[in-house]
Length: 212
Image (cartoon, rainbow, N blue to C red):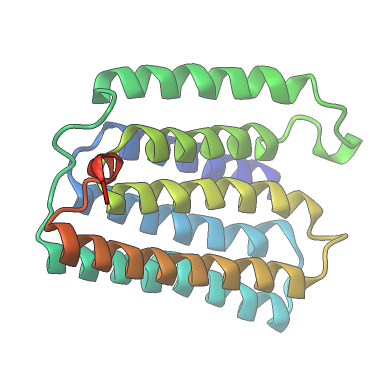
């Protein structure tokens, strides 16, 4: 099971590079949706079967892999934005930074005092690499939808790290974190809608030019 979980985590990190290197928002949203489905499968792999676990897994897959991507596609269609044309940092440079931070995530994780049962697993480096990918997407993209995608990836990284604590963390805490994610996405959707209505653009860099 640990080997299969590590393979899924490698796939999650590869999806990070798809998002960093893609200018098409459709591709980025689909990549995040696939990443959400993969992460939804992980709890069922690392824990013993129970109907309670099945319910949590289905809820995570629906939220991360279906509902949130659908909301993003709907917002994208409404504002008619298909590509991130002029990011703050180019795609090649972003990919290079992403590769460096992923390598550093492995170096940093190897130096952490992890529990013996967590030694050698990819959960910690995959978590750090995914959080850094989310942070990069948030800070290097201009469009609000791209920044929402970065927020989703950042949350996915936190979710991966949380999987190491599921034996000590009540399931209701995980459900609460998922609810926070949904609320955050709805709030971001409202913000995107207002930005689009007021300024006919969702380029957040233009907000720095606001004056009374």
